[in-house]
Image (cartoon, rainbow, N blue to C red; front, side):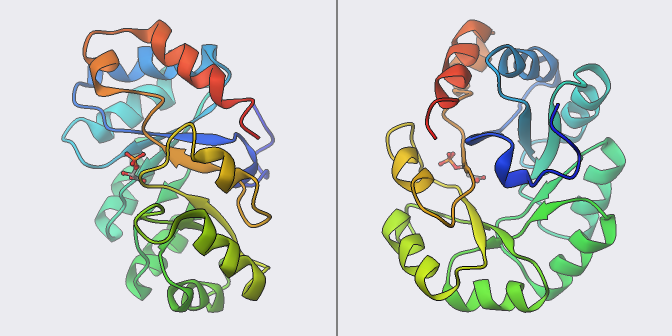
Length: 208
Ligand code: 3PG
């Protein structure tokens, strides 16, 4: 495992963004990622199973850094922290959501999609952000333009990114990693095809 002080953006080229429908899938899925060399996982708080999945992975797969995604407010942030999440990711960033993220004491990536949103979060002292929804908001060319005017902010773009488009993001100076759900396809997870998840994870290591 990387050092705890290492930036979230520098741990792996691709953070797997995962929707878990069945808590029984959580541990084998996390183990499949670790076998493929990916030691970070973001469980989105979009299903009833998400918090239990975080709890199970935190307890049983210590090799992976488990975080919570789709954090929409203070309640999500607190419950994810209590479940064992070690980082938090939000799709947007209101002042109260930022306060809630800060108050957990965990590393976090607040979502932004425009330069004004980036500046607002930067004014709050945060310099590592999520860019969401990346493809729909202008993609790599948009982030490249942002790098020219706000060079001291780095991003994890997420949303619509594929194993092919990831490389153009990862080539940018203001991108540390990307997020994506393609490492854990729903059909593979549904049938427990963990070897496929391991292969998809391993393939991301050479993207940067
Ligand atoms: C996210 O939560 O960041 C996105 O839903 C992941 O986007 P993707 O499914 O398009 O990779």
